[in-house]
Image 1 (cartoon, one colour):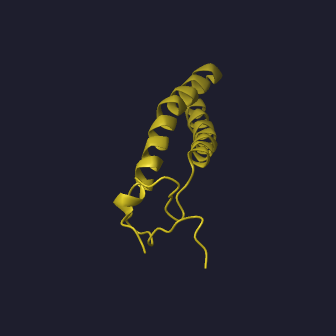
Image 2 (tube, rainbow, N blue to C red):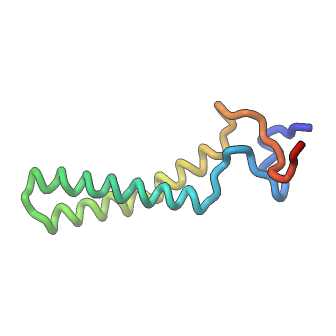
Length: 93
């Protein structure tokens, strides 16, 4: 018996198939922000030729956006759009 996704989140031990753990979402957010901060710092450096300013902008950019990205990922994990039906992880045939 498949449960509606809105009910699934209320069931202990239930996760939608393909739903990411909090640790995975955090790891993805951090790795992406390292890449993005490097690109941002590089672009700022190209315009200013100031290493300290470039690094500061890259760090500030990441500090703001990592929380936003993590929140966005977790919100999308609650949306069933484009996913198949959920099943219990411990359920096998």
